[in-house]
Length: 240
Image 1 (tube, one colour):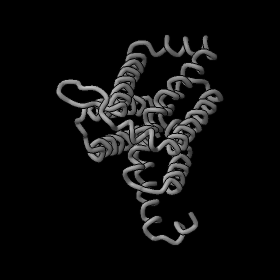
Image 2: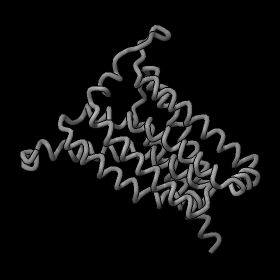
Image 3: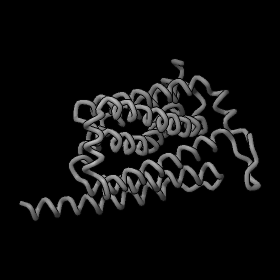
């Protein structure tokens, strides 16, 4: 283990893997930020911390079940002349969940925002439990995707664990800023929900064996976010 401290290849793998884990964690941060945005401020902060803690726990636990994870990539069923593994099924189901959740949230924002918020306020305890349940589901999906990617990029478990710890720490810092910004700007929230639909479609495509390079998706997200950021600045200037 200590040999890794003086191995330049290990440091290169750590930097590369950490960057990749941070990028993959963007999806997780957006989903957590959107879910907690409907909760009261104190509950939202607690739910955000629980969601990120679960993301860390699931990732670290999965790292110690590498043999089992590698087995998840073996074909288990045939569908439409394609061999699907457990990983494909999990990613496909997670993608469908993201699409359904984002669509539901968009409908609530457009058609029934006041009613939805009233319902959350009236049943705060159940709303908090429901948010945590959804965080568990999506954390499992994103963790499996993240760790299987890590397996392909590094050979040492120690490097993977350190990369995951750094990535989750960055996610923790970023999630607070993202959550606050989304809560303050309704148009940004709608844009984030559109991102979730896009991510969900990409996960379903991956599950069906049609890989969409994440670079295209993240570029589209970054471009749209930059345009919306300019819009936010323009609105602030007009108000001032």
